[in-house]
Image (cartoon, rainbow, N blue to C red):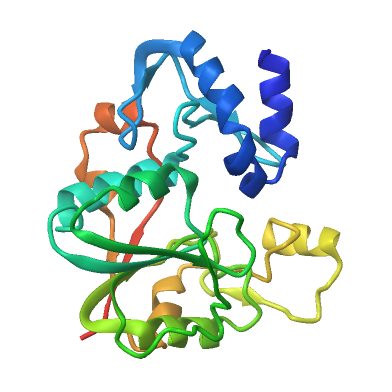
Length: 255
């Protein structure tokens, strides 16, 4: 069983992993119950989280119950601790929604919650992020995580997200980063998947964000707060939740 789970995690694309394999993973989760780690999203407690990652699987990464990863557990905790997301009435656009969030956010009575993407089988609305069909100033909150490294025109996509966000609203837009890079690298002439993997760390990525990611988001008009929230959390608790200790939360407001 463990070997089958490992193969699923390593070779099945995440969108299909989220769509189909949560059932065997949840069964396997029953054998992993313990008290060494805890998921901030589903509150599940386990001996450890599962490894996850295509090229070099990260140990203690994937919650076997809700399929949250390190970044999801951090974002959920951030929303709990630093926003009124779970209490205040809001219209929410969730681009490329993550499996671990969908049911939970749909059940919140204070939210009008819309999931959208151009290809995700989990999204209810088909939407091209570079040509969003919603009117100006439509949403109070936008989530767009691990998407902007894939889009052809980053500047067009971020301006569209800014356009449909209401004044006073906020967006959280996380992306893979290499903090050793002072500047984001992007080269549209690179089309070979292996070369993209070498340069951008994944074959379907079109850019690799550096230390200037917040500045790149700000070019669309956002007021960007680079929140080092993870370091406000007790270190032992952060380890228990298996949080990404280098992750910065990009909290982007429209004034």
